[in-house]
Length: 116
Image 1: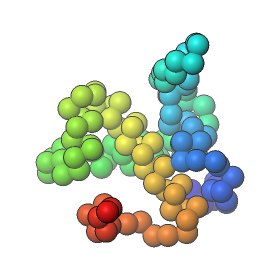
Image 2: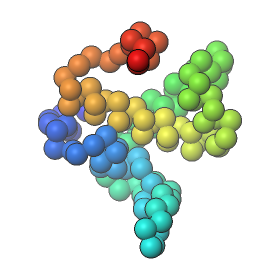
Image 3: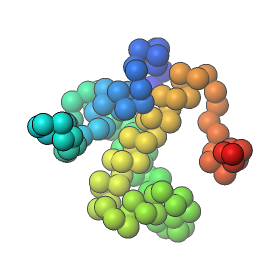
Image 4: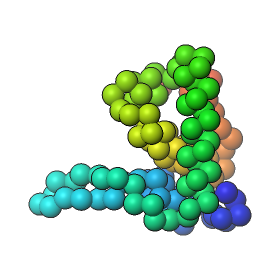
């Protein structure tokens, strides 16, 4: 990923980064009402495929062991498997963008200090 994105600060937000990869829905709407649609499949095909393959492998392992992440468990309960897979890939892309911009290592939610 670092070969494709030398400077993550070029993107304004994690959503912009995920959209550049092609993991966010194509926007539809009129009159100020925003409705995201299907992923547009525009963007970097290789990175998108890697993120989706990684998300697929993670979801497969989580389903076999029992989903421990509450966000992921709720998402799988209300959305189809492949939609949840792409949503998890987009979330992973946003986390990686934040890590690159801040220059910090990954902190798991369980090891992070609780917010006051």
